[in-house]
Image 1 (cartoon, rainbow, N blue to C red):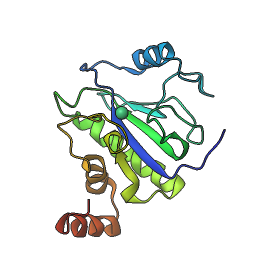
Image 2: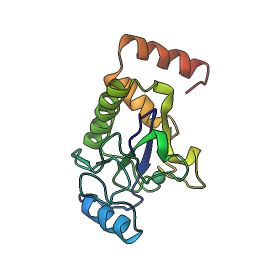
Image 3: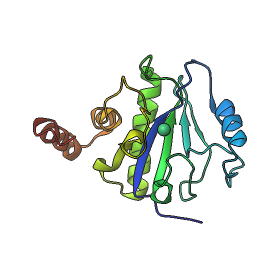
Length: 162
Ligand SMILES: [Zn+2]
């Protein structure tokens, strides 16, 4: 079933390693019997952003993922490889994730307020206790934002909206 993405939900892999994790995640999600994607993967997220900043796509953006129970019908899932209860994402990984958010937002006109951490929906600390809820929005705004979104960020921070 195809859908029109309305928001981005971001995750961490909760696995502490600097290696590429896409293949590992694919095995874990195969074992959990997640549905095979049109691109040939079991990975429940649409994208995985690796510690070195490389990005792998597992699902078409209009294909329903398996990354956030009850929330998959209108969201694109992005997973950053790593355990952010223990450490922060790398600079290259952060830059890639911010660019990916920019590209997805432009394609689907997703509002900046709809870039959401997994823990808003489920009983989980995903995407990691070291990262605040607005971490990815802020990184996107800092790195890829337009004059308008930068203004939004300043106002949002001032009035605690982000
Ligand atoms: Zn998650």
